[in-house]
Length: 155
Figure 1 (cartoon, rainbow, N blue to C red):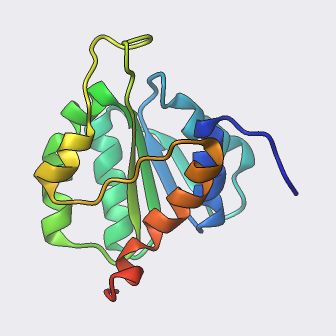
Figure 2 (spheres, rainbow, N blue to C red):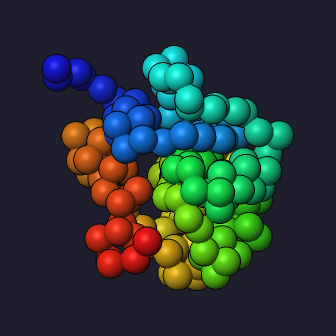
Figure 3 (spheres, one colour):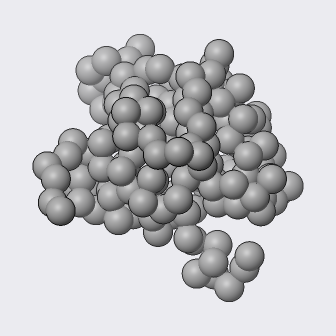
């Protein structure tokens, strides 16, 4: 079945197709639609929460991934500044499940206070960065992101 989806909706649908168990985030345009779409579509067994801030959302997602669940955390670019402390630690501690950090940058900025390129955080934290160019690519790429460690020969 084909659907016409916006990019954030495609991210949400791709995460569900990848078997995500937990999605946490803090509301902030342009990332809000990811968590909203998961909440609307969520099958049994998927936990969704609006966290009190981005740092708490990152920690909730990391906790689920430490326990073996696939988790997704969502925020906009300014929120990654708030969540940078746990982001810089999660890679060194390691996880059992897959964890994807979805950050919606806002070039312009159109709906945010500032403009920043959060792809640089990937270099700082030594984590891979996936950057889709279309909704279809976003749907596929989020699934690849969850499977990235397996493709590298690690569990």
